[in-house]
Amino acid sequence: MKSIFFFISFLIINSSIAQISDFKHIDFNIADNVAIMQKGADLYNLPLLAHNLTHDLPTDVEKFRAIYTWVCNNIDGDPKQDNEVIEKREEFKNDSAAFLKWNKEFKAKAFNKLFKQKKTMCTGYAYLIKELSFLADIECEIIDGYGRTTSTNADYLEITNHSWNAVKLNNKWYLVDATWSSGYFDDYNVFINEYNDGYFLTDPILFAKSHYPIDPKWLLDASLKDKPFVSSPMVYGETYKHKILPVSPNEMHLTSTRYAEIEFSFKSYKNIDLDKISMMQYKGVKEKPFKIYDLKNEDGLIKFKYKFKYKKLYDVHLKIEDDIVATYTVDVSK
Image 1 (cartoon, one colour):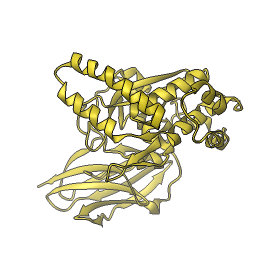
Image 2 (tube, one colour):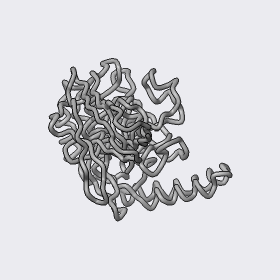
Image 3 (spheres, one colour):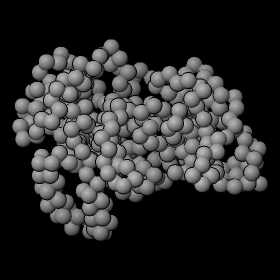
């Protein structure tokens, strides 16, 4: 992982932006328990599944929550499908007609595997979320675009490799990603089902750090729509788990001079103990912490500073507790 370090600020969340805080009065434990009660249900009768997940819940957001957590906790990611699609995209990168023909045949096999084995890739997750929402009379769309990770679309938009959903609740559109909420692949490419709530009704500004739609209207935030894609600090599943938004510097790759002071800032969507915040780099497999200073919380804006002393390229990682939540590179010259 590459990283650079920064001045951290946590901004107050704009209430006009569609995000989970709009529903802070809702106890999602009720919907989550409904989903747990349906654990293991098959996919051969989606109308019945949608009914069982939603009929006892009073609001659309609770119904959608039950649908979402059921999908995330009952469907496994399939690395074989992911790899096959990536390979075919590369093979047919100069022949879109050939790729579309192959993809039509592949989809039939993929959906068969989804329904029989409950294994899929992002399109399968997005399809289930949309279909179950439709059956519950909730408006939902599949959004195709660029998923940004350490290995894909990190510095520029290269491959349309991901799908997620937009859902309309109380006449307002929200963003969710059931694929990345459902879990992750370990170092042996084995899927680990570990629910991450950070991708549920996420603030569009945070969501855009790792999701860029083909149609910019699905960025949802007006401040993002007219701006070009920027290679911002690398974020991870843990970023969303801790609900952290890196703010400044706003690019992943930084340049600086020796002893120049750099401020880093990020905003948090929940309270964080300042003692849990640190910045480090790797020396081999060992972590080497940086002695950051002026760490403070100013009305929800978390800040700290650091001066890089040596002429070199630094990989810098911001940590919350034991989790890396953002990465920068800092090229120090002179």
